[in-house]
Picture 1 (cartoon, rainbow, N blue to C red):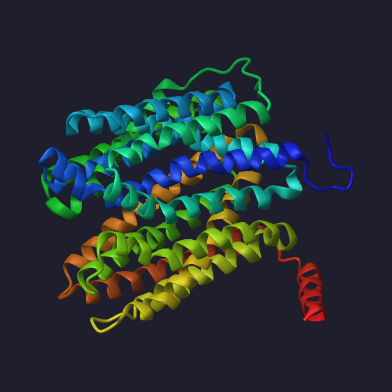
Picture 2 (picture 1 turned 180 degrees about the horizontal axis):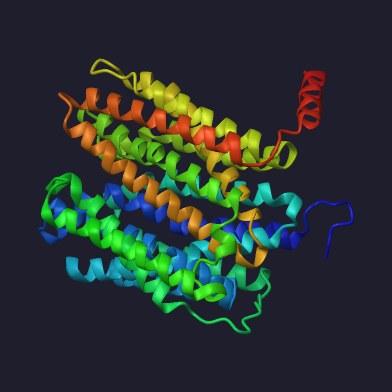
Length: 472
């Protein structure tokens, strides 16, 4: 029932709450295990090279299958896709928690990646479908705010559980949270029944895209260790390129049945949102990896302490994401996405000025500005990209945007790692890498200004400034 005053209905509030909880399950999982890796190494008597696949394996399967998950959600119903994905995620979380050896744990993590790849695009599609178009900014803010909060508390939850009752409880915790999200979504979100007449699953497209993405991700993951000219790495890059070329050829012949239809990838604003996301994602991924490295190796922080040390960035990210929704609705995409891009550039450049003598307090201003940039940029560019596409394909659009984020982060992280490890010292390497990231942010800003969101609504901006001055 619609609210006669134009406000949100009880069902919309409950639905947003359920989506937020569902996002927490996925987002928390990306970071909670990062501080548990040493305990997993000890439990199974393995080295770091093997243990890191507990995180990398999940992320890789997630990245490879997320576009497929988005397309399936649009074809078979987003609530159905979410329920199946959440059930897979929860069941294999429990299997991972009981894993008797590292191989069972890794297998469980790979299958959890399948569940996550079905959940995330379905959540995005359901959220944007739940709210009217005028509140699309709020939808993006809630989802990315919940994701930021989940990423922020992940290391704290993971560290607390690992130190108290054991790392296995990180997996067990997923079961009740996922079950709660499934129950609320089942009761609040209506079952969507998309028109599937004449549609079929694009199996060749799925296979070609999966091979292409897997080749690139494996090459980027292993390249910094084996060397970028290693024959295996060059072979993986070749496999990735062959897969993407095959995907382009398959999609051209598939027409309307394509995994990524022409009207999606050919939309100028959507393509610009994907490209800007690709450019910016190196910044966030690099900060998540190298700031804890600096805190641990240069400042002497513990693993949990380094996770807590990221809170100025992650908490600001989460809070700003919630604020970005109303601002987007009032001022439009160009101004908010552009402001986020500027803050990303300024924040990472400020952090690039660190030296061996920099203390933790010297990192905080850059982390805060960076957090504001992440919060403004990601929620708003997601909304701008998804709302540029037909609503029937919103889950697919959200999945492609997220894949651009993962791809940009992976490529950027490989570039950053190469710059850091070849420098004379860790602080010097981080400084060089972060300056390169700032240059990428400037390129992303230019894309935003030229292609996203039309003109700035000067009248609404002036009215908003006048309103705040009057209240001051």
